Amino acid sequence: MKNAKIIALSALMAALSLILQVLPLKIRTPWGMSIDLVAVPIVTLYFILGFQASTFGLIVMTIGLSVISGVNTMGIGPLMKFFATLSVLLGLKISESLIKDRNILYMIVAFVISTLIRDILMIALNYYFALPLYLKMMGYEIATRNDVIRIVEELTKTPFWLAIALPNTIQTAVDMFVALPIAKRVSRFQ
Image (cartoon, rainbow, N blue to C red; front, side, top):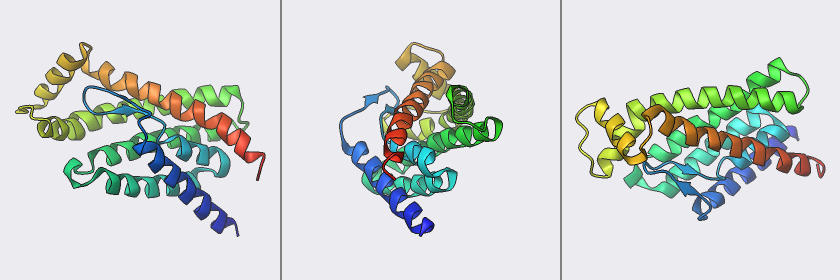
């Protein structure tokens, strides 16, 4: 019965993520990232049922996002959303092993760890993978990795690392601090 509950709620939350993806509730960065609510159901799932269920929901969500985004995007967005959200889930899991009670200290530590994991991973993935492909698709001439840095810095008027880290830090805060009150409310009805 527990596995059925995990599968059903994970599928439901993944479907909700897909609905949030097609709604215009997002802020776009110049290089294609969106600050949105898409991962909130998956992080909510973590707070309700734990790491395993949220990881299953994340995989289902990523498959759905790949279908929605179509072949023209080469799956860059869904793959980046997968790793970004996985970073948040790992930060929450690591924090859970450090702080047993889900209190304010747990949330602060989880936010800091999730942000560090996500920002470092997203800077690396954007530099080596996503941005070279995305910027080429957008018509930019990319001969070297330095071109990626130059283009992002020209578009944002900020250092490359900050242009990637700042919106990812904001997105981590949205994912965690919107999900927590929803999870507390939903958990009362289980």
